[in-house]
Image 1 (spheres, rainbow, N blue to C red):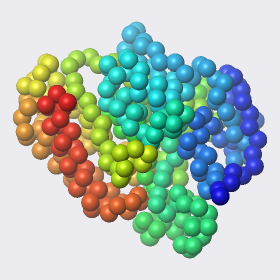
Image 2: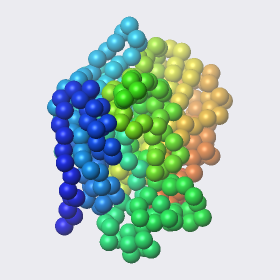
Image 3: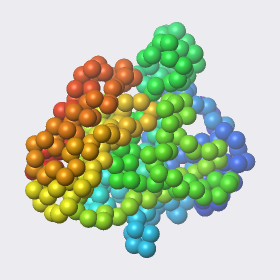
Amino acid sequence: MLRLPQFEVESPDTVEGVVTALQRRPGARLIAGGTDLLPNLKHFLDTPPALVSLARVSALRGVVRDDAAGVLRVGAGVTLTQLAEHAEVRALFPSLAHAAGSVATPLIRNMGTLGGNVNLDTRCRYVNQTEFWRGAIGGGCLKSEGNVCHVVPKGRNCVAAMSSDNVPALISLDASIVLVGPEGRRELPLEEYYTADGLAHTLARPGELTLELRVPLPRGPRRAAYVKWAVRKSFDFPLLSVALRLDLAAEGPHAELTGLKVVAGVLGSKPRTVTRLADAIGKRLSDPAVARIVSEAAYAQCKPLENVPYEAAYRREMIRVYTRRAVQALAAGA
């Protein structure tokens, strides 16, 4: 049986109270749904002196369309179930609604929050194990008790993978993240929030809290999708994921592409935005060349590591396959 270590819990009811609690208890961790943090505590991957609960902070739970700012504001405390089922999210951002609805199981989606999923800890087949298991492979790894990366033995950086379903979808939609801390509020593109270091994979500062995500409202016709591959269709973390947004000159499958953004996940500690897609611009969505250009670019630029189960070479092939199928499905109106 995996047991939780001892810790204290504080439960403020305002954002300001949370920031104050984090300042008062250095090293304290935030907990909302706890679906990621509590298993890590049971595996002794983290031993904070205290947890600061967000359960009573109602200011984090709203979904508001802000036409003046041209964004949909989604509070960090909105659960994944609420996000997946919200009528305006489904109408404006179907790829985000689908991503939220594909996380784990209904029970976990009922508890897990968008803020928690955006700040999901990185995962690796060599660290997300029991303390006993980690000790059996030579004293852990860079992310736990040891000093060796078992994925890249001579590497100096942790390459644990970011497995969030929502992050690639949000980045493909040009979302930004709003944080609040001792130094006040700040906003930055979500794409810039992540780093290539699996030990500190976000730019969150000490004592900061994620307040909300802001997703720009669509300015014209477009189609978007999120696809993932996992061993099972429920419960599992993705072994690879791809989010796509195709901007169109008009409605319909024969409209020309005016822009596109493709983001791949579960490669390393930050998602990868696929570049060099200019050859697809100006082509009709129904043109088979679009699926070929996008899928081949994703295959060429995305190189998985052996940081999650299944061979990296096979996962790379699946990036090509799933990206091509996604573009073809969007062209067919699916």
